Amino acid sequence: MKLYGIPNCSTVKKARDWLALHDIAVEFHDFKKQGLDAVTATNWLQQRDWSELINRKGLTWRGLTDEQKQLVNDNDSALSLMTDKTSAIKRPLLEQNGKLLYIGFDMAAYSRIFNVKVPT
Image 1 (cartoon, helix red, strand yellow):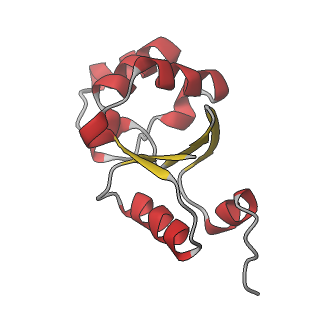
Image 2 (tube, helix red, strand yellow):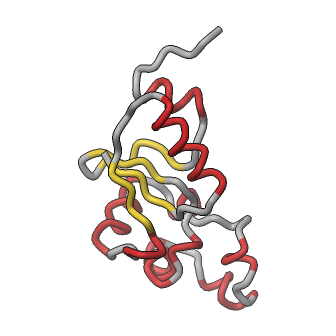
């Protein structure tokens, strides 16, 4: 199982802290150090709509010109953005054997994915 993200992202930190708290080991893929290959990004785009994968609330997206933003309108243009500017990808992304399990972090969703009982 792999968790993709950026170490200093607050949502990634929450996910990693939750995983550590529950003694769940995952491989961490650091976009900043390791980038993202087109094969992995294409695989994700085959599973989810490109608009679910692009973080349009983040600093990277807001730093794009209006013209650049308008050019991101399909899988091919999203693929280019995702591989060129990995900070534009929503994170974290949880993946197992190529299957994208979850985008972002939600305690209830992670509890379901990892079959962890949520305290009531």
